[in-house]
Length: 272
Image 1 (cartoon, one colour):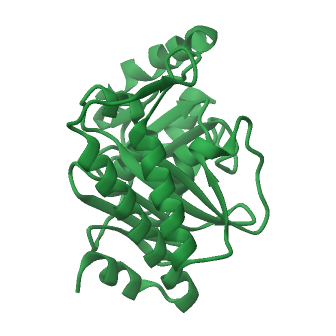
Image 2 (image 1 turned 180 degrees about the horizontal axis):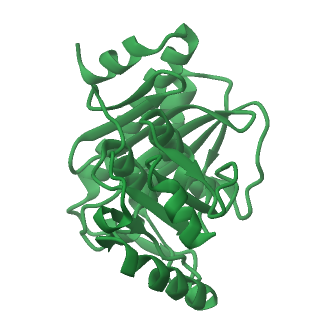
Image 3 (image 1 turned 30 degrees about the vertical axis):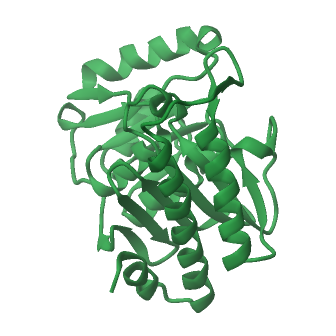
């Protein structure tokens, strides 16, 4: 069995299995386009002072939407490059897509980026897929069933103490408006943990928390497509996802704290 067939076989519900397969197939389609364009000259446009969009974002999004519409027709779609500003939490079934999370990394040839596809029903995650094309790593999760990396089950770490933890964070695009808050958080967390990583792709960071490469992640000023898939990956891998104060999470809340069950309350105390 290939990796998609393997993860789909674990799903308990046939409809959910079909939707997970559709998300995996679409992520691979988008990722193959990104991989093909990686070493070519890029067309770069600015959505803000430091917020980029490239030809790969647009091409990947178009291919992902076409793939999902073919395999799972009739489901609403919210995708980064076509959603507009200030997206609102939808009702019913909706695909939430980041066709290239980590665009700045991609544009600079830094191979830390991914396709992210999450499926929500009335705000509750059902399916989550993150695909890192340069590493050919397919992370997938199905609600109530588990999380996998290339078809193998994954789980969060069992790290109990902050001093042993490797955690990640990210910086908002409007860093000048949030600089004091970002520096305060860094100054609070950094002395307590083993180290901090800031690699520039929240979807990948969440996937790495889910598979145990990172012990935790916190970040502010995110969009729903940054976290909709990774949220489910972490929870299905045994972790906890919330806002900074430990309250119930939604991708439409612009902050996230994800960690294993031992570290989550400790990080909440630092950030809340």
